[in-house]
Length: 120
Ligand code: AMP
Ligand code: ZN
Image (tube, rainbow, N blue to C red):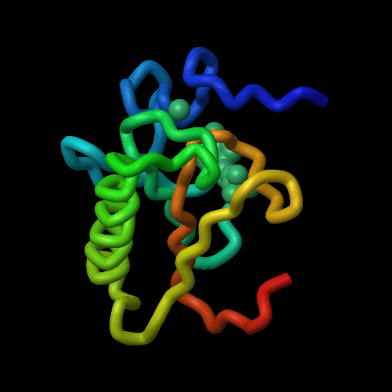
């Protein structure tokens, strides 16, 4: 299977533009967040930069600001969802060995249960 890493046919770019509807939980000029279709915890939200960046390996210096904003959104959503104090997990997968399946970077925000370490 060839995985498309381009912006042209990117599902998460279509969520960001509004071309495809999704369950949005947070929006700002540079970032948006929506609920994962296959949740791995009581709350499982994906936080993305609006700008298309395929993988962590494609990050550039301006992308550093986007990454910071993903974490600011994670903190805000964790507070909204009520588990900021209790604790939560944020994860970003890069390429095949880590199981990345959508090639527009996204921070997984998982909360509402206890997490093990090391992760699988
Ligand atoms: P990753 O494996 O890190 O690339 O994560 C991709 C995530 O996107 C998975 O957790 C999927 O469940 C999620 N996902 C795939 N398609 C959709 C969709 N249409 N709406 C919401 N989440 C999705
Ligand atoms: Zn994209």
